[in-house]
Image (tube, rainbow, N blue to C red; front, top):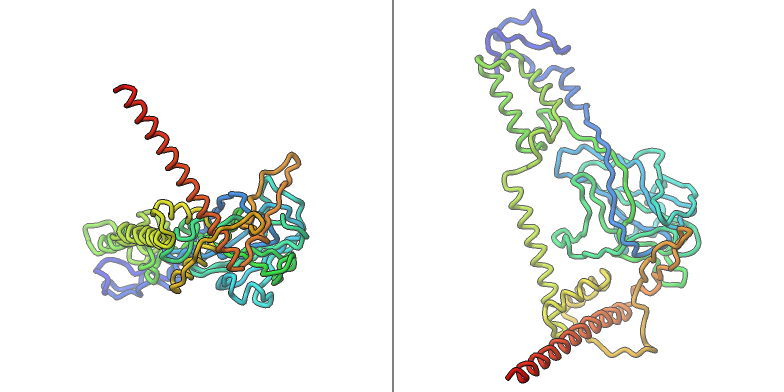
Amino acid sequence: TPRPPGRPRMTDAGMPDAGVTAGEAPLPVGTLVRGALEKTLEYQSFTAETEDNEDHTFCGIFFDLRANGKYPLSYLEIGSLWVRGQLGPITVWTKEGGHGGRHGTAVADQAQWEKVYEKTHDPSFATLVELKLLDPIKIMSGETLGVYVHSTLPGDQSIVYDNQRQYYADAVNHEACRDDGKLVILPGTAHLSNEPFGKRAPWGGDALRQGRLFVGRVDYGARWMLWNPDTHDRFPMGFRAAVEAMMMGGKRNDCLLYHLGDEIIFYVMNRCSWDWFGTRMSPNEDQVEETKRNERKELQRRKEREIAEMFGVPVDQAAQLLQQMDPYMLQHIHQQLAAGNQIVLHESSDDDESESGDESFDEADEDGESGSESNEEGDDSDEEDAIDAFADAADEVFENAEGDDMEADEEDMEADEEDEAEA
């Protein structure tokens, strides 16, 4: 579009070109200005700290980190991880695209991973210890990075991690993720072998346990995009509206912006942070989020109804079962239901009790060391163990329900006796 008469063209140095004839069409954006718009990134430092329920300890954990692609984020730089436990000789490994889960090939193939950290640490059960990476790890917007933290220390108290308590919390995406708007920390897989990528647990059997969560802290920096015409659509709706208002003002000869030129207006907007005009990306953003929440709730209710129908119990008791069960057993039951199979509760004697899973990680003793073991060996992938543990949880809920009913009956009998006495 030709420049209105009287407004000078800007040179590549960002200064008015005195030799330009009024009315001559300018370049859309000067070369120097365009280079600055494209290369300049805004850097901010953040810390993402996870919940710590002290559920388990063992040799290592695989988990994934993702750079949230919703906002105009260019990439994240992971500077350090923080963990706690018996520690010992610690290594950190990374893999582009994620760790692939318990049944993927990457968790047993060292060749697919890059070692980014190696150091021996003293025990620290009470406080987190920093694993500062020599070179920050870059995660581009929308991409996923697999992370593996491991200790070769013998025993089962090297690294603390948690159970994935809300398996269906984000069931639309089949993930229970922790997201601060920039960094997403996804569920992972525990590793029970003190040999990196080892396939066997110390007592035999599979060395992997799915449905586990990283416990600790992630220090990272965010490289935000700064606005330029090519990235306009990546910015929030308020920012886009501000750019349009500035450009319209630059076309009115009764506005001061008229005398700046497009290049300077572009440069001014480039210097504005992406969230200065709000963070809403679309007008119906709240509606979309509400729809997702409703879908997750409906999926949870459907799971509860399936369990209630299967065992012939009220839905509220089925909901208690779902809260008490290990995520792996939840997935196993769900797969059996989806396949049309039936799972029948059976009576279990004291002699026939199987280990129901991992014991809780007790509080530290006076010296700051744990006094308990995590006993991941009870959580084998064996289907019988999963069914037995499910049955135990069901029996507990049923017993509690029967106890409540008995208490209610006793209260009714007492009330009847009082009524008779008054009569």
